[in-house]
Figure 1 (cartoon, rainbow, N blue to C red):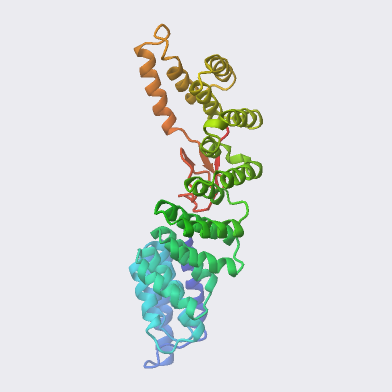
Figure 2 (figure 1 turned 30 degrees about the vertical axis):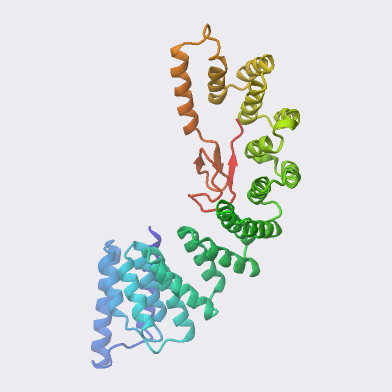
Length: 384
């Protein structure tokens, strides 16, 4: 049974219970009113049993007048409409409730919250935002309101507003608020770096690290920022700490390492790759080491390491490198190898390299916000 149908059954039971306590027809005689009410209620149950939920909902909605004793029932019926996908009807029910002057404070707050959910599901984000802001001003479930607003702003990529909401949730002690707050700060910092606003980027990244000391993304952005302004010493310090602290993201550290150890520290870069490959062997590290050997004309080292790699842990990337590497020898390669190289490269672009630890969503590129379950920093690299 669908959840909305289950809720409708509960609503029907509650309506039946009210039959014994409430007389809705003041203009008819008591017996006539009771008989008519019972007959319509029975007809609604028959529709429900026949799986005709549309007519059942209509009868139950018409049957119960809106008064102080039935507000919660109408709110539940509105929720049933929303659960069923009939958002316009849900909005109408909840709007009608809010228009009534006899609501208690609690009932009005309930109606506002449900109407905001209706607007959110209908895609009327500006209206939903307004109501959630009203809930915050009225101090009605502020955590819920801030959480919904945060999701709304993330959807719209309104990162400044998202930072504000995440900050409020962090102050309220919400679960995982530190993670959400630091990731939103990283979003604004990344934009600031691209726009050349290094001061704002540094401020937001420092705050992100303060909130979540293990935020890999913030550390990577700080490294990028320091390298961009020419402070390689600071970049190196953060980089070394990051390698020790979160080795599971080693594949993301290769480019920063190449930039930090360029030119005169090439030997240090090579030793770094060799050591990390020994500790955390992966295709990405192997390819980086092979490319380093080839770039520095250490051909024999490259040949030997390539042979070992293909024998011990063959991969599309390793074969693709082999074809490029051996292409310089026309005696060994021809047109067939070129076609095969292109084919392998296409397969490599489609390969799953990251998987969400929360929902299993797969991707070939790192995504800090999982598109499926919307958890931050839940994507983990697949070891191959």
